[in-house]
Image (cartoon, rainbow, N blue to C red; front, side, top):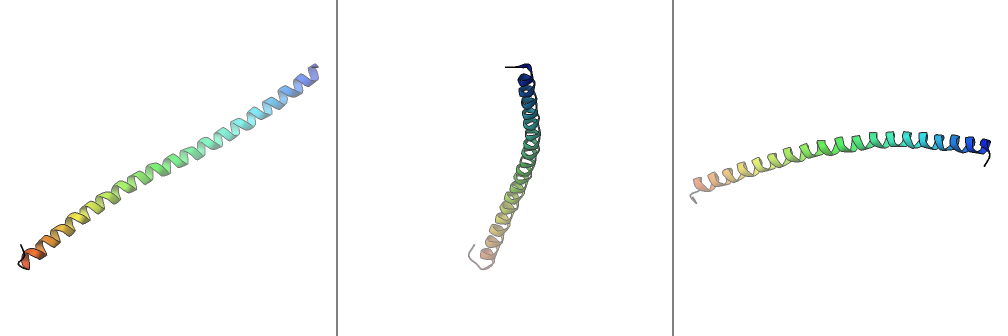
Length: 73
């Protein structure tokens, strides 16, 4: 392998490494966005479950009160 070929190969490898670095940076950005979306979704699910639980409690209370006043309780 001549010195010219060696320099050419090194230049090609440096270009490949630079391209890989750019791709890794893009993937890191995408991964951050996915992580952010999942974190926000988890908070949304917690709120949804709390609202559902509260609605069930209110609904059960209303049903109990209605049956009490109808004379069933």
